[in-house]
Amino acid sequence: MNLRDIVIKNRSYRRFDENVKVEYNLLKELVDTARYTPSARNIQPLKYAIITNNDKCNKVFDTLAWAGYLKEWKGPEEGERPTGYIIMMGDTKITKNFSVDPGIAAQTIMLGAVEKGFGGCIVMAVDKIKLRDELNIPEHLDIIQVLAIGKPKEAIIIEDIINNDYKYHRDANGTHFVPKRRTNDIIIKL
Image (cartoon, rainbow, N blue to C red):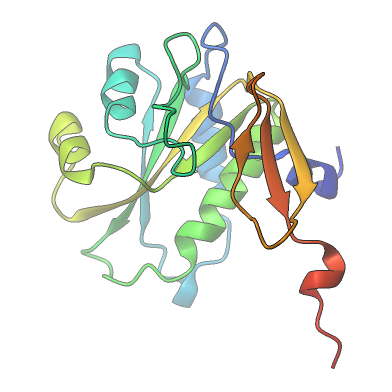
């Protein structure tokens, strides 16, 4: 796949095949790739916790909210949950301003996951207090987001935004639709 194909295939997947396990070493490789990305002022404040153990995965899962626009959906059911997580944290001993680093690193990790045949969801709706307590995360590590990773088990269709309705939605079959602005709508001619 070329970069464009990987970017297009990189969706916010929320249902996974739990029979396909994400290996610790794969997630470590993705984190290692992310460490080469640009960092504001080159300060490199990000730290990561890699979770693949079933018990810890369940603890992480219980701290996440999955789809704000799908009010009736409580998240993936058993058998459809991620089999790996990367908890992205900022080390406040280094700096309290993580700037653009989390976005750059998260996107790099997700693109790498797609390249390896996996997919995921960047989750920012996290009960950070509960997650910190469950996993004994030190206080100086500010939990930024959780990257949920697994083998995607859902169809996602990209469609054009109509009437400025950008909210993702699902049909009766569970197909996930993601509206995107058209190219001509985002390019400004000066």
